[in-house]
Image 1 (cartoon, chains in turn brown, blue):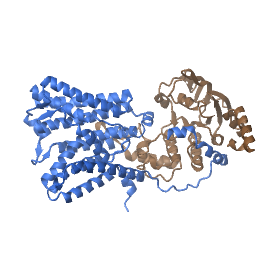
Image 2 (cartoon, one colour):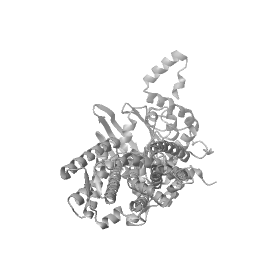
Image 3 (tube, rainbow over the protein chains, first blue to last red):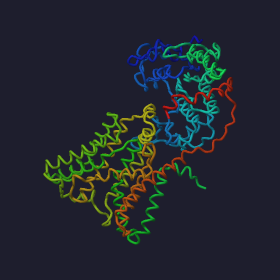
Image 4 (cartoon, chains in turn red, yellow):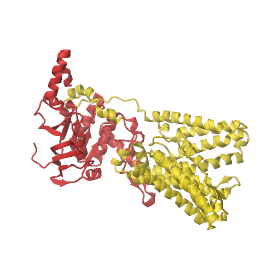
Length: 270
Length: 359
């Protein structure tokens, strides 16, 4: 779809654990300013793929490229250095820490010199409130408040805000909407669009087809470790995608079976 | 109304309530001597000694670990001092430095074991507690032939570590106050302090955020080893002797003081000031009972109940601190292009396998 070099790409990546091939020959392009949706059922290899992208696993074979150049991520730290930031389902935050402290964990701003260097709480709290406000969490006005007092969606948003603030180029979101209510999920999706418009490459992992269709520019479907399909926005219908994710034939069989029991199998599409 | 929720956010709040309660309780039932100069000194001394171990142990516990070896390390530090300066007759300051160094070294061993072996710190430090105790018994008996070693502590060293101020207050009080200041600085003002909370909150996330988890944990154990040995040295300076079995009561007493002081047993929450209140509460109950004329056997019962009450009230305050302000509806339009889709599909996703395993 785009002729420019993707910011990040993986080519023919496989990952084998013992005798189990979690990923098999998967290639993906991740473009700046686009949302790539990784779809697939549980166990399809989405998590393994994220771990390869974020440096937790090294691929067994195949290459990872940044700006067209092959790279090797030995640890998550290497991936972070390349601008890759992963936000996990629950935001990866600390419920009993203040927002300011949690936001800057590992990269604490300091003031003063030598042994008298101290954590700049004022600055940390100011930044976190600004960032949250900018992301539409307007009720947060106090950086001393506990992370645990935020809702699931707000925690997700604060984790995204953190990644964006620290200059992420690739933002990997692992099921960000899975545990959220409708309203909160909508808010998170809006934040994803915001990140995209800032030129960040977003990898959205989900098995919620509706959420994917809402924000996605490009889609890849994984089935049992293999890339089953790869298409741009508008090239597939919602039903085609759902069928693909559920494994096509298996789904049709199940529908037939259910239809014979209840007289209607359509409802399972959602 | 001043803000109860922001007060509740402070871990020392409920600890202070506890201290005030037991202080008033024993001031009344222990009147008039409990409130006197000597009465005050008895519990302040006990609190100060306990604080020397509890404060560094509190940091270990905030990081989500335990240190059960503090009693054995105390004995090891004390015995090192006593054997070197008493049995071998070396200058006292050498014994002190060696004793403190042994404490820090044993802390280092604990820290390395906990971070490298990847077993729960409860088991690791339970094992080192016994191992160190065994070594202390064995080495002491081999070198000196006894289990109690006396020392003639040099005047200067005795005044610093085991002196009495106004004839009643141990210099340990000054050490404890200094330690509160140092630990508070570390916790509130350094990056290291932030890492301690992050590790206790969620070790995996802390690692992902770039916190040097192992190095920080090892440093914390060195701290608790040092604090234990410092108290061992102070006790030798006070009583001019060291005993192999000394210190084991501090294993549980320190945990009680730390928990009563508002530290969350699973880590991630707590404050040094709160722990100071915890040690005071403990000391007031422990010593106050003698002023009431009741049998001192009852102090253990009171401490046990206090511990339960403390944990329950800590939980209540923590919930209060975590409770979100009433969730205000943010009236915002659904995201462009597919609000309807978003609405229809969320229901099915809430029951994912992932959610179940991550909670």
